[in-house]
Image (cartoon, rainbow, N blue to C red; front, side, top):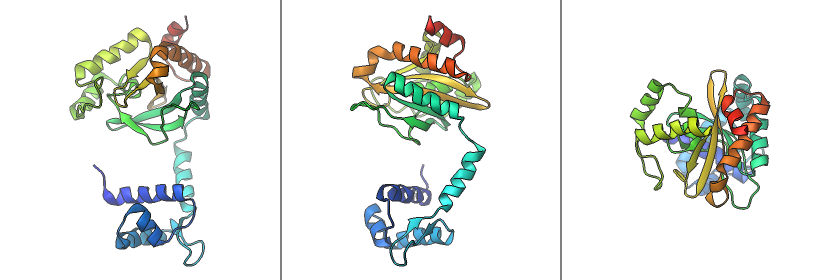
Length: 254
């Protein structure tokens, strides 16, 4: 469920991120297909709050630096360790595939940091991308860190939407995949949510947070490379000194 007013503010910010310069109310309304009255009310409210301003009188509106100061204050209280960001970048470089750091957000996993592959054909993802917690290797890397009762609470809320022929459509299938982690030493997926997308994931335990690292790419390049990708990822995680697969990475390295 989306709250329209909140979604409109996000859509407005994304518009300015693309537009890159001040815009008049008419330009905003036309670009976002909003009524003039709604545009006036939203922008006017943000101006009053100090989040928008007019760089030049009658020259259009633009987000003010207040956004940065507020976000910086939030980020300073919940920083992602630089070693973890470096790890994502290293795995992306060594595997050649798009790599992301994810955490749980309701029934999804949201990406906190992304390094896209440089390959012409690649998995396109960005910070804020969400994937289903049950129909992705990243999601199962989070689920696998939960106790049985916690997973059961998640399962009771799931709606098993069929995204593809390989989407897990029941709890037994998810639990089978989780048991496969113990056998393989890594989580994997095969086009469960996005067609032709292959993923390999590892859990990362950071203090009180449950995180995961996933590398993903097209089946034509990654389906037969999942084990090799896992070896690379396990080696990078182990050498980073982060709380990682531990004995699992050692087994993979043999």
